[in-house]
Image 1 (cartoon, rainbow, N blue to C red):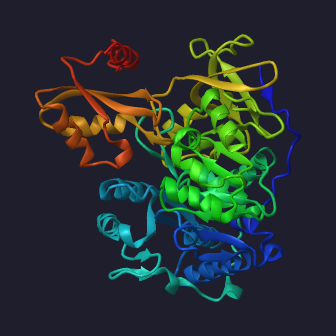
Image 2 (image 1 turned 90 degrees about the horizontal axis):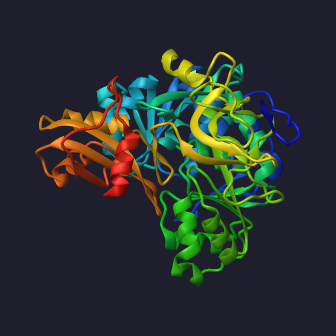
Length: 515
């Protein structure tokens, strides 16, 4: 049975994502659009509009053409939004990269995305230059200034000369984040202008971001949650965004108090800190109206504990990189803690028995399928993976197992896909397994996620080897970002597999629980 959203349909504006996001910038004028939390440096809406157009003009003068891909390898800064929307205005595509990536990981993404330019921040310049050299990118741009790189400020041209690029919103890409989907290695997720504009329109009502709100921008803009909900939705509604380059609890709390944050967009580990950490008592957080959690499951008990302590509404939503991301969300008016809420406007769903491919009986578990304007165009240069993820009728198979009640509220109860979610970040087991098997003393390996109260899940390796666990951990840690590192290693005699050679991860999970 096709399940429909209870929300009224919304209108999806046509055109360039940047133009839609900044359509009311003149109206908001001198109001702060972006505030750098650590320094207080501020960009107003009028300045943001001018800077975005100036960057687009400068990039066009330097030869950026429609469809050219530019990498942004940086933590959250006000200039991140300038770069993202300036590139979009010029008709370019942004591939956003986790700044904790190693040079090897960065180079792999830049090469897959066919990036022609790279923008970074001074602390990450050495890694950026190493990756750029490997891929053949000649010029690396840096926010601020650093020796051996082009200063971001030197890119700007005359805002009045910003190019007017013809955009086919339904087909032209604007963002190319990378995701592992339901299985395998990271793949480029092709998101069009229409995908992201649609998702802003879809998420707007439930999240109650409004003219004059103050949003906390600690969730990374390279991640689809931060990109869509904070950098696009909040700014489009006239909300001031206070940015943080990384999560630091004392500064996080201080900025809420200092700037009167009304909408705090977070992940479950931050909700846990807000609910239980004693430091919270030292700050005035009474301005918070909405605490919005996503990217990983949030228990009803933790949501209610945070709501009681802060005196605010705690909401949970759901989505994937491949759905721009929001497909479900609770709202202040209709909120069921523990659920991911109801379907977003213009979004359809099915709950499907993974064994039969038929719709599951009412109230029963099944794989969640999604269809709507926020569903990606596909995976870059990977039609096979695209066909595995999106069927011929346009249904995206999430790999998550869900139930839905008679009120239309969905709950995620299990996962078919192999992906591990560590503090909201994707950790593909296949990637870690490939790295483990590179070692000549490792005969076989498998990686699973272990439930963890703080992180959601932690990566755990099962390894057939004569190495000790610390040596195995170091082998992986030397090649991956911090969030992908193995938190535990079990040395085993063999890896359980099916007759076809597929790793039996459920067997390993049972062994892990028993141990």
